[in-house]
Image (cartoon, one colour):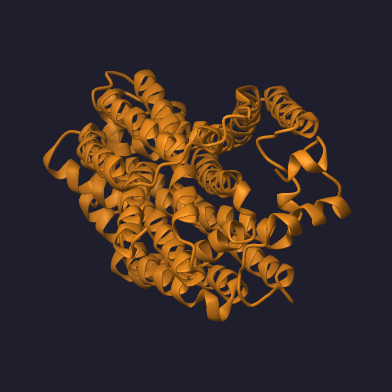
Length: 521
């Protein structure tokens, strides 16, 4: 394949990845408007945001293995078609239930596309340095897409209705379909490799139970039996999944991959980076609009400062990985991200203009850390496990994003409802969320409305500060973990051969079941 065509393939798969990443965060700035237009309550808001990463995380492992079976080019094309159709459904959703269903269908398309993007890069770029740059671009697009989601949503809402944030996907899907058919390398896949949809369902059961437990435990009127039941369902789903994988000859995930400390450290780092990215963007965009009164576009422009740091850091990090190795970029990146989050926390009282340096620093740190994590996972997996490794990485991204939104969003809501002190005469529903308080304050006399807003924003800021503190602590822990686990690792990340991989399995035991010969095929 010529160099021009290789980079054209990268541009094509990056277009699909950009769609996936933008849709992860595009609703952050649109959420207040969408909530008002569709009449979504706090629970519906949580599921509108979380349905996308939740379903995607449940399907990614199966999608990667299915891509190995039918060919990653074909999976990418199927994913684009599903994503385009789901975007149309979401754009014209008449109520929260239809929108949640459309977001779940979007996740099906995204799950088909996402492992294919990284697998196509893995098979297209043979040169180690070129592959490092390509993965750097891939990681930067993933981070920047998440960073640009709020500004895309804000810009569209300045001129169109909230459904436009989904409708914009359609022309990009059409262009990516045409380009993929023309230039993406064909692959027949391995028809002898089975697909296990039951395992994907078990993962989703575990995730839904976990998210529901997080949501319930952060409610002021929490029910401990409900929390216990949700956790039990979650644990049962994950246990059955692991048990099923250990007994299958061709599992969705070969746990021997995770015994490589470089791969496992990369998985943890990728998850923490997306935890910070999604969580910070969610709570910050809500504060900028609901507390400071900025428009969706203004909030999106401020949050987009994240991309100013992440894009150059990701590309430069990918280009220099062959010299520096993954350890300084992964550990140092998360440390820089933690400093940026701390800066956001300290500079919040100074006004929204002072948030920009902190956001740029968070972007620099997370951009470098995510590229290093991608290279650690993909370059240390054997070629015949490319689809599986890509799926494992992307599951870590989605779990990180899902956890960030679920935990930090729930912390924000919980602390608000637990600490808000409504003034006399204020409607009781104002205690449910800051959105409700803002809406109710507009209908009150000026003095009462101002008193209600003061009480509501004070309570909201308590949750905001706690959410940022949790994020900074998680990044510090991730930086320390990566620094310790990657000590003594090779300076460059080179893919080890299938022979080496099989040898490691013989000494560590095969976690996925089946014979060693079947495992190394």
